[in-house]
Amino acid sequence: MKKRCLLTTLMTLMLIMTVGAQVKPIVLGDKHAMLKMERGSRYLLLPVQESEDIAAIAVLDNHNNMVQRINVKLAVDRVDYYVPYELKGACLMDIEFHGDRRQKGAVGEFACWREMKYSNTFDTKNYEHFRPAYHHTPLYGWMNDPNGMFYKDGVWHLYYQYNPYGSQWENMMWGHSTSKDLIHWEAQPLALEADWLGSIFSGSCVTNGHEVIAFYTSAGHHQTQSMAISKDGGRTFEKYNGNPLLSASDVQDFRDPKAFWNEEAKVWNLILAAGQEMRIYSSKDLKAWKYESSFGKEYGNHSGVWECPDLFKIDNKWVLICNINPGGPFGGSATQYFIGQFDGKKFTCESMPKVTKWLDYGKDHYATVSFYNAPENRRVVLAWMSNWQYANQVPTKQFRSANSIPRDLGLFQFAEETYVSVVPSKEMLAVRGQKVKKPTETCEIVIDIKNQAEIVLSNAKGEEVTMRYDGQKQTFTMDRTKSGTIDFSEAFPCETIAPTYGQIKQLRLFIDRCSIEAFDSDGKMTMTNLVFPSEPYNTIKVKGGKATIYEINY
Image 1 (cartoon, rainbow, N blue to C red):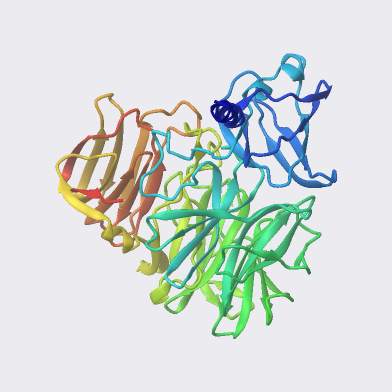
Image 2: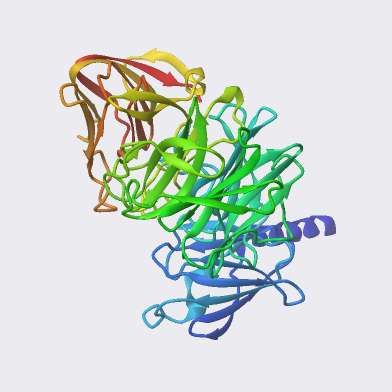
């Protein structure tokens, strides 16, 4: 009898611990509270209300030493979703609420205190209608730029800008996922977390023998460049005790280092974004970096800040990737590029300064960078599939943002210019399934087209996406103004148009719940756009062509 009562008591205590008794804050003012942590649970589940102002949280250990700072939109009167804070050695949270509290009521009555829960688990099961099936996404939270991508020992490593404490931009650190086929991704533990030099902004990784070396931007009061070293294949990193490696006093935006081994020059090179130019450095040991040159003045588009560079060789020419925000061809963020020669010190563009070349003509393709050390001398890239104009508002909550499908880059000639070709990576053929009669929410559609073509994807709700190819004008357009949910941003409904640089004979469309990626099969045109239909597009009408629809096996 005593054992049964004891068991019942223990079960009740566990239920209180995991389901959540109301926590009791120490209220210190109309914007200030503290919360003592209870022992025995792995997580404190924090309730988020996205319409609220940020609460700045200082986490202290049992010696009252601050171990972390995070910003969370703690719930005031309703809960949109929860995010887990792993307690580890946390003993106290010092919480300062920002914004005007006069209309919010007393701090001690905020919903967050009623709704916080201690738990040993956190549910990452997908509850989102719009979560892609075969594109990489974070399990939860916010994701933007892909970072530090490399290939080693049969595994593709993808790091990314990550906020695990909300599904909007904040608290930047490096998340980490791995894949053996570029399609199926496994979430890994956090790779790099903020320190007193600042948040962890974008960067790159190189492999040097058994080590993986990460270069990233420490974003504090100023942006500086730092390094971390992994001796277990990129799973965990130890930050270099000589950080920061690089700094600048003449520009505010100084970030996103991309490092690589230059076999021709026999040096390590590093390129990073500095305002509206790219700066190039060289090194013999990856620690001491020598400034060599800058590129960008008067070249290409300068409507926004230059970011996330990449520099690599394809055939006998060098390609310099330059992501820009704003300034894209249809507003917001986009990826431009330059082609020329590079001698390890200076990049020389072969085009006239005012020539602008875009890698993708959709609204939702940004922060494109390539994998280091990809096999077969391939140049494989991923992009962030969103746009800074509305990325924080897209209609998902459990997570925000996905990466594009993997793409292989090459070169092609048109008129007197050389352009970068973009085709779906061969791994996408490996997941092509059986032919089906109707489009589904996850499919590939191959369309053999004539000189003029119109393709309409639609559903029973009257939502539709219309694509047109004009062989005479050599243009391809996609209209998503009636695609489904569009009212979360005035910048979302739009028609995008791309030059085709000659005739298109075949299109490949990849559809995955909230995205359409269109490719000319020869790689001369690509367009990536998000869509949010209330139900999947299950009807296709093609004028001037013939469509074959394939399942995607994911």
